[in-house]
Length: 217
Image 1 (tube, rainbow, N blue to C red):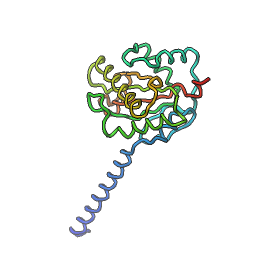
Image 2: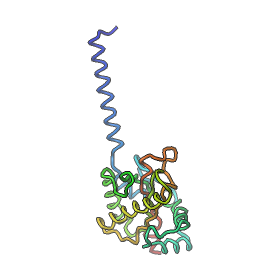
Image 3: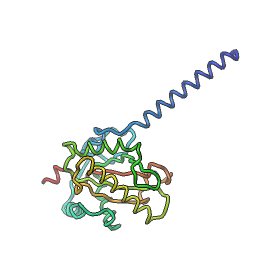
Image 4: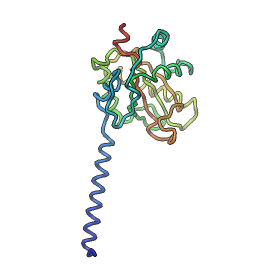
C-alpha cells in the first residue's frame, strides 16, 4: 500500500509524462511538409515520404494521349471560373493516375486567405516547383472547400482558393502562370466525407499532369 505522499508523487510523475507525450505528438503532427517530399511526390515513378500528407498512386505515370494533351493545352492559361463542369470532370479524370500530393494547404474559414500555419507548406511548394526536376512541367492546382454553404458559393470559393495559391507561386517564385492549371471543385470532392466540416477539407491538391520531359516530346 502506497503512502499518500507516495501516491501524490506517482500521480505527479504520470501527469508530467502524459503532458510530455502529448507535446511530442503535437510537435510531430505540426511538422511542415518539406520541399524534398513534394519533389518526390510529384516526380513520376517515385514514392514520397507520406507523413502528414496524402499522395496518389506513384508506381506508374502514363503519358497523356493525344486527346488529353490537346485538352490540357486548351485549358492552360484559362481563368479558373471559366471552366465548365464537364471540363472540371475531364481534368479530374486525367489526373487520376498522375503524380499528386495533397498538401492540406488550409484556409481561414469562409475565406480564400491562406492560413498562417500553411504558409511554410506553400513556400515549400514554390521551391519544389522551381527545382530542376519539376520546373517547366504542367501542374493542376485544385481548390476544395468543406461542406458548409451552398453549391454555387462553395464552387466560387474553391476557385478563389486555387487562384490564391497560383498568385502566390507566380508572384513569389516567378513560376509561369500557364504552367499552373487552376480548377475548383467546391464541396464535391471532400477529403473526409465522414467529417464534412473538418478543416482538412479546405485544401488544395497539386498534380503533375504533364512532366516537362513528356511535354518536350
